Length: 193
Image (cartoon, rainbow, N blue to C red; front, side):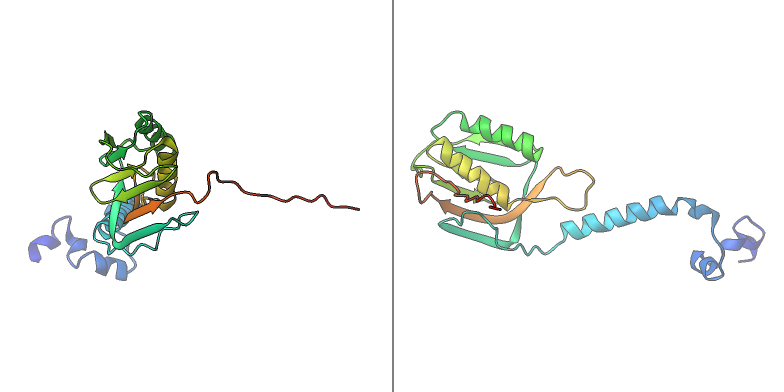
């Protein structure tokens, strides 16, 4: 310790905590707000990556015929994701790609799949796993319904300045419209004097 007393580290021998306890402010702490911001960011990222996921049941309107999900499995939709679309309509892939780019601001890889047995009449299957997002339907209306169900289940990525990813639980949805068209009846009565 004797050699340090004669150097320019003389006031720092006891450590920075003792300087704060004595009411002194270290000159090297001028960048403390930036350092604390980085520390909070690093802590939030580490907590996000190590988080035990506990998703609530996705709220899809109207209620699908069948919905199963795993609350503890997180699926991430971003530029590194793969979306597989199975549909007889060739425009389905372009429509979903445009919607994801415009509404979600993500551009995942799209892989059209060969159709085997498809739900028809606006029906669809939506399978979400950590590796793939599968939208399966016979016609464009089914793909539109599947996309809207997926959109309702997605949650924006948290803890970032600009959202570049969406998360949801691993899930499987099978649904078909109960009626040929969806509508809402609104009664509006003018007030009478």
